[in-house]
Length: 209
Image (tube, rainbow, N blue to C red; front, side, top):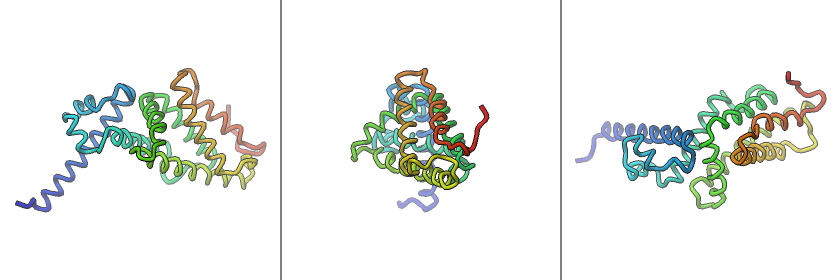
């Protein structure tokens, strides 16, 4: 017997809900246990499924972890970047960017996951390859738009073009995570903020100490 349309819709909705539950649980487990400590087995047990049951919703562990990072990005965007783009010009961008990095210090497992998958994703066949390419492009486009506006206004240095500066900011943010993973006394947020401050011209927006 062919399932009725409402039955198919109900099954689809349940499948979507279970997938979301798996992603949220995996996010929490990885944030708590770290990349190595978060096994598919542990995630499966937390959502009441077998390992095969979890992988029914994802093609592989790597795809599951890629989607966890995507969800993390969406949550960070909602918390630190409400609306479209970076809020409040250069200072808004600076504050939001630094706050995201400060927040990363509270979720070391996700930082480990990001850094590990970023290396593995250099392989074009890796499930996270497209995610990192798209994420980097979107990040740089958003940064370079604000940077170019502020350069035209004379607020920040124009000795380096906006697209290059955006790539430098991305590289520093990613590199700081690796340094912090090795040396937990590295202050990622303060270092990133110092770089933003270094971009200001004499007439640029000042920030209270």
